[in-house]
Each structure stands twice: as C-alpha cells, then as structure tokens.
Length: 341
Ligand SMILES: Cc1cc2nc3c(=O)[nH]c(=O)nc-3n(C[C@H](O)[C@H](O)[C@H](O)COP(=O)(O)O)c2cc1C
Image (cartoon, rainbow, N blue to C red):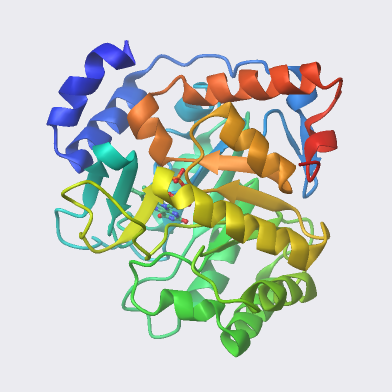
C-alpha cells in the first residue's frame, strides 16, 4: 500500500505530507498493540520495553497519535519536543526530503502547541504501551534551565520517561547547554525537579561532539542520576550529499547520519563502559542497522527519517529481523546482544 501511495505523498510538500499522515493516523480505528517475540523484551531504566525499536522525537510533537503509532509496531514512542509555552517554530519551508540521499533536513525550531495541551491529551489515554515525553526550552526564554525544570514538573505525571533535549540545532544556543558548567548546572536543576517515584529521565545529545566531550557528558549524567543517553540528534555537519536540498540550513538525519551516529555511540560506550544505558538513533533503516547499534552497546534504538522512505511497516520489519537474528545465534534475550558486536 505504502509503495503505491509513495509517489503521491512525495508530490506533496514535506510538511503537508507529514500533517496528512498525522491526520490519517488520528482517523485510524483503534487496534490492539501488537505482540512481539518474547526475546525482544528487555528492562531498561526500570521500564519493561516489549521491543527495542522505538519512534524518535519530532514525528508526533504534540502527542496527537501516540497510541496509533504504538499499534504500527513500535515498542515505544517518544512525543515532543514540547516546550512550556506554545511556539510557531521557524518560517516555512523548514522540512526537506533528500530523496537521493535517503535523508531529511529540518529546521522546524520546536514548533508545538505547548506542554499544557499535550498534558491534557496524554492524561486521557489508557497508558497501554510506553510513551516518553521529550522536553525543551522556548526560543525566547530568558531562563532555559527553568524551562527544563518546568517541563519535568509538568510532564512527569503523564510520561513513562522524560527526555531532556539539549541537542536540537534549530533553537539558537540550545546546544551550548551541552558544554561543561552549563550541563552540570542544568542536570542538577533537573535532578532537583524530579519527584520521588517519578519517571526515569534520559538525556539526548548531538552527534557533533569533540573528543573528550563523551567522557565529560557521561560523568555529568552519572553524577545527576540520568537514567539513559539518547545518541543522537540530527547533525549540523554535511557529509557528501547528492540532493538539491543539500545546502538547506538545519539538522540532517537519515542515511548520511548513520556513520556519525554509530561513531558517537561507540564513543559513549567506551566512555561509559556500559554503566549508563544507551539508546541509539540516527540513520537506522534496517534490522541490520539496528543489530549493529545493539552490538555497539545500545539497549534500545529509535528511528524517524527511514519511516519517510520505507513506510509504516518498518518498525515491525526491523523487530522481526532482530528476533530472527537472536534465534539464529541461540540468544534468548535482546539484552544478551547489547555490546556483543
Ligand atoms: C522533521 C524532524 C523533526 C525532529 N524534531 C525533533 C524534536 O522535536 N526533538 C528531538 O529531540 N529530535 C527531533 N528530531 C530528531 C530525531 O528524533 C532523531 O534524533 C534524528 O532524526 C535521527 O534519527 P533518524 O536518522 O532516524 O531520523 C527530528 C527529526 C526530524 C527529521
């Protein structure tokens, strides 16, 4: 079905196609969350994930369709980024498909309707399936750390986990929060905002880091009791690209990000020695890609861009491919494969 519709979808402007997809998912009749092979289940940060294949943040920014997305075969879905106050994001066009490169460039700029409206929607759901909430800071905020503190307080009651996103390239200066003193200050404030018994907190980092950053970030995250690192967000670098949109400003994701994201994952694995769970994102499009990230130390994986090119059956296909690989190797659990490559 997707193969037939793809040429039509690709004739639409990328953001219009995305809005149409969300609208279609809103109208999809409720289906049961699919069962996964038992070997795919694992416990990470105290949560039981039925499959390690998740949907990355940015697809369902306003938490409109998390349950429809879970029923497509994702083991977990991350909504957001949500900021305390609504904001429009950058002017359009701000989302580009790079078909020849199997890539996407976006400079959305945290367009979202704010945490309040998502809170209401998420509060009404039955909470079957893991839904994480990714939080950020408003562009015009005078105190960005206070925005993260507010996000933790507001969204914890409806989140199975929270992600502190300091790695989007489209809010000027946001990535500076990854730097030494600022990161320590931010993570201490986030730690202080967590209520006892609240959801685990993950930290999402950029792939564009300098040598030494990985050790420093792991140390800061461990000191602040961060439960997992998501490696990584989009890149501001531009590997060789063939598409006419290659020079658009924004974050690059999809296939050309894969080598960079895998290298960053390896750096975080060697910096942490396995002491902090890692969640891999960036250019994952096949079961082989997912398997390689798990072998390199990821406990879970997330994807977004490959969905644009391969359609809604992708999460299921990757999960099946991972289960097959486990069976072929006589492994009974995906946890046995983490860091085995
Ligand atoms: C259109 C678009 C919007 C995104 N928005 C967000 C966002 O709001 N917050 C975030 O943490 N990551 C966001 N991302 C980054 C993805 O979550 C993911 O980290 C990145 O795209 C790499 O994965 P991929 O190559 O599978 O897409 C966005 C990505 C895309 C393509």
